Structures are given as structure tokens and as C-alpha cells.
Image (tube, rainbow, N blue to C red):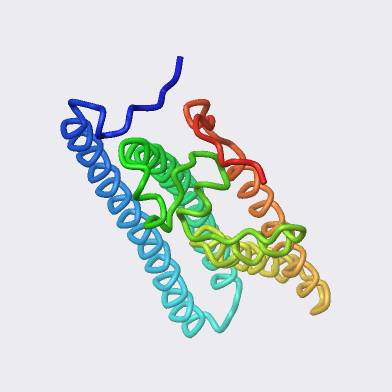
Length: 229
């Protein structure tokens, strides 16, 4: 059974359909706006906690001269920052999935617009197709054919989860270095421990983010895929 609608000229209720589609479109736009607002709020909250922790550690360092008390307090506070950072990254990933859902929904609505008025197609710069390629076109993300890995890596670091993942990985590296210093390792051991903590956390967060991007809801299965070229 075809899901396409007859052109507006032959559809007696085309006006009502357009009104319903436009109402849903505005609803999705408002929901996307709320998603962006929460994303920025989460990032600001994490950066405020991180800044407060650094200031508090600076005051403790002045009082204890980087002694055992400072090391204990620093490990504890940076562990709290690490937890908040991981939770923030997880929430941002969930919000990005929600935003992808709303984009797919608007692409489907755009497809319905063009079925009612196909003559408007040359005026759209966004996509009427609800597959992954169509969603990326609507989001304005260019995918380099033949070099998807490099482009995806650079784009991932520019996103809010990617940027925060680097900061969280640096926090994990600092905790590793402090633990190594506390157990009495020499300077090169402290550096190795800090670097290993950073690399391990960055890799784990990167793998987590990559798997999160590929995990879509069954309701987002493409109903109007892009034409193959």
C-alpha cells in the first residue's frame, strides 16, 4: 500500500494536511530547541564543577604545600569531577540521539510537503529522505566519500560529547598521575601513569561514542531512503 499522498491539486483536503504537517514541524523545532538548551546547560554545569574543583585544589595546595593532604583531596575531588564528566557525556549522547530523531521526523514531514507540492523541491536545501544520509544532509554534515574515518574523527572532536570526552580523559590522566605520585613512583613513572590514564579514558570514551552513534531505534528505520546514485 503506497504511503504517498496525491498532489495538492487533486486532494480536496490538502489545506488541512498542510496545516497538520506544519503544526508537527513547529513542534519538532521547539523540541530541538529544548534539546540544545539542555545540552548547553549540562556543559556549563560540568565546566562550573571543574572550575570550582581546580580553585579549591589551588587553595588546598597553598595550605598543604602539595603534601599528603593535598594528594588525598585532589584524588577525591577529581574523581567526583570524573563521575560528573562521564555522566555529562552520557547525557549529551542521549540528547544527540534525540536530536537525530527529530531531524528524521522533520525529513519525513518535508517528504510529505513535496508529495503535496512537488514543484517546490528545487527550493529546499535540506533533505526529504529519512535515512542516515538524508539526516546528515539536513544537519549540514558533509561526508567525504572514500575517507569517512578521518572526517568522522575530526567532526566527532568538534561536537560537545567529543570535546568533553577530551577534558574527561585529561581528568582521568591527572588522577592516574596523582595515584602514581602517592605510591612513590619516580617522575617518569608519574608521567607514564598520567599518559596511560588519558589514552585509556580517551579510547574508552571514543569507542562508547562510536557505538552510541550507530545505535538507532527501530522506529527510525528508513521509510523514504535516499535514491541510490
